[in-house]
Image (tube, rainbow, N blue to C red; front, top):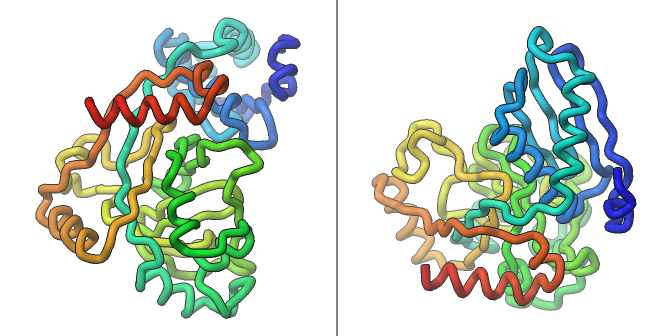
Length: 300
C-alpha cells in the first residue's frame, strides 16, 4: 500500500486465502472509521464493476470477505484486481448512507429484569448495566449518559452473526468513545430488541437469545422482520445496511407503547433519510459535518 495510507494509521493490507472459494482482506486489527469508509467503498466498487467470478464482497469492521468461483477466476488474479481497486479508491468521495431514527426506552424494566436474573455473571451485580456503563465511562447521572449516547449517530460498520445483527461505532473521536467489557460469563437469555454495548460497539439484539453485551435499553422498533410484517422491511427482512447512521432518540413509556402498537398493527414507518456521506468532509470536521447532515435530514 501507499505511504499515504500508512500516514493515516493504516498498516499494509493483507490478503489471505479462505479455503477454495474465499479471500479475506484485512486492513487492520482495530476498528477505525477511516478504514471502514475505505473498505465499504471497495466492496461497493467490486459490486459496481461486477468483477468476473465474484459472488459477493462482505464488509466487516476492518476487513472484508470475498466469495468467488474458483472455476472462473484464479485467486491470485483476483487478488491483483482487488489491489488495483484499492489503489484507485484511496479516499472515497461519497458513500450512500441512510440516517435512521431509532426510538429507545433507556433504563427499561425488561432488560433490568434480565440483568438481575444473571447478576452472578456480571462485573458489578449491585448496579444495572446502564449504571455500570456510567461508572466505567465517568458519567455522573443517567440523563447525562443518555444524552451523550444519543448526541451523535452510530456508524453501522458491519452486519452479520445472527440475522439482523448490526455493529455500530459512535461517531466521535476515539478518546470520547463509550466503552465497556462484556459480561464475565454470557447470559443464556437476552430480550429481543435489547439495546446493548460492549467494547466500543453498539448492537440491538434481533431475536431473543444468549448474549454478553451490557444492556442499557429497549428499542421500540425491530431490526429483523422475517415475516415482512412492516412495509419498510418487506423484501429485505433486516433494517441495517453497512454504512447506515443510526441516531438514537430517547422516549418514555407512553411513546414506547404507542410505537409498539403501530409495529404490532403493521402500520409503523421507519424514519429513514438517504444521504450522500462524504468521508473526507467528516474526517476534516466531524462535529460540523454531522450537524449539517442532521439539519439537511430534518428538512428532507
